[in-house]
Amino acid sequence: MIVLGLTGSIGMGKSTAAAMFRDFGIPVFDADDCVHQIYAGAPPAAMAARFPEALADGRIDRKRLGSLVLADPEAMTVLEKIVHPLVEDQRNKFIRDNKDGGAKLAVLDIPLLFETEAWRRVDAIVVVTAPEEVQHERVLSREAMDEDKFLSILRRQIPDKKKRMFAQFVIGTQFGLEPTWRQIRNVIAALAQIDK
Image 1 (tube, rainbow, N blue to C red):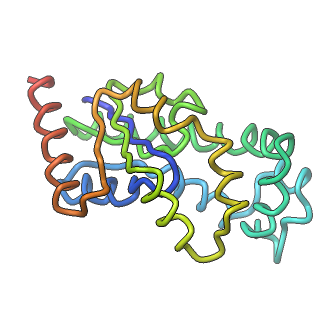
Image 2: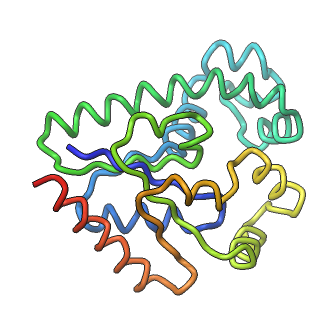
């Protein structure tokens, strides 16, 4: 089974690309969704102990947690040391289950693929990209997003240009859904040739 790492900076269209891979019948592991599930359940003891201000009704309130860590690199590092191993366990299970199930290709949708060194677990990398002005417009159109929050998120991510340097495939999303879909189809076809 080929494991494809899918990544891209905020606002580049990665979630749309992941949905298109699913539409082609490719299993996709969504790291962000995994994190949301962790927050939705009973919080890990280390998280509750370190970030008690983020608790509401026995659960992690993501908005409160975000306000505590986004402007505090040390707190963000602590949070990542708690969350990333939990996500890695689920990612490894996803890979095992799909390999055992006979999948030829599986996608790991991981925003911080390089930053968390998850790229070491993949056979190829696809980076989703768009021009900076398109990215800026997309991100600032989101609810509860502002320039400061956007810049804080960008500071935690490897620059788009550097990501593209390490990718075997680059998908530009600035031209709309149909061209993006065609590029994804081409990536799947190229990987199918490798797997023969």
